[in-house]
Image (cartoon, rainbow, N blue to C red; front, top):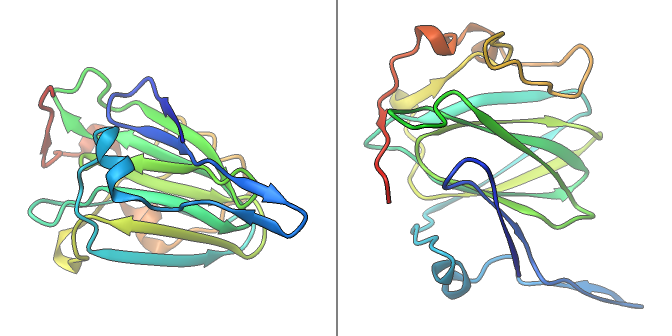
Length: 185
């Protein structure tokens, strides 16, 4: 397994060891012991999956404490550009984002700890997005930042994105009072 540390502490890109031959491929998509060895000690309690058509943008979402969630995300079919925005008050990287191309072909996973808003743009039709969550979904704890916030200046890499009403009505980062506090580890 190859671990790529990002410029934003806590965000990790995980490249599993993939074994390919004439029959196809095999890889471990989840191994609690190996993740613990690299510092990921979350207890995963819920798996989610979505299917999106090319041009769909979902995000930027998070769950507020006490239902905050870490996520371990990957693509089962298709491709997406995945984004995580640091929304931890006091963080030296507050308001910065990191993006990574996730696809069924590159097998990459993206670890997003609590304190980040998350979103993605589907780059292919029928993109199946799968993710583990460290806490249960709670509707009253939903939060979001506008996907098209000009201060974030995210290039979603899609023209005329298809979004939900929630994603176009969230607050801009400058008007957002984050419930997350940065703590150095």
